[in-house]
Length: 162
Image (cartoon, rainbow, N blue to C red; front, side, top):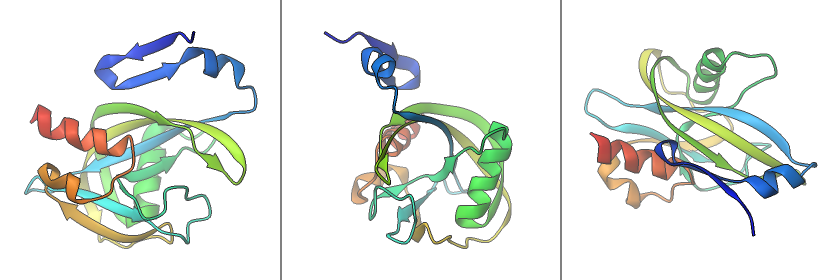
């Protein structure tokens, strides 16, 4: 039977046995942004089939992506938001930690993501090729959108904690 490591306040459940036996997994860290406007709406983006590493085409999620080797978390967060939606942001606070295990171009990955609430300090929304639509949504209506995990849990927690 597997042992589980649970970080309940952060919303993370890790299968310790699988983590220790999956030597072919590529582990990466992602920075994800909960971009909230003055009306309390959250910016979400839909994954497009044109993104070369997209594994959840057609699903909605928060803005962000994987860090480059040697990149600081804050620099990676700002870079990902700028690349994906053209906005300049400043981090406010961490709000969630989650993980997922996609197979990207035939290679299994384990991605651990830190979700940050951020504020927009500049720029205009301009989507990258990784996304084909953006929407400012009332977080209480996130069920109207087919959202990927764990991003949907982040939005749910933001509603519950506000």
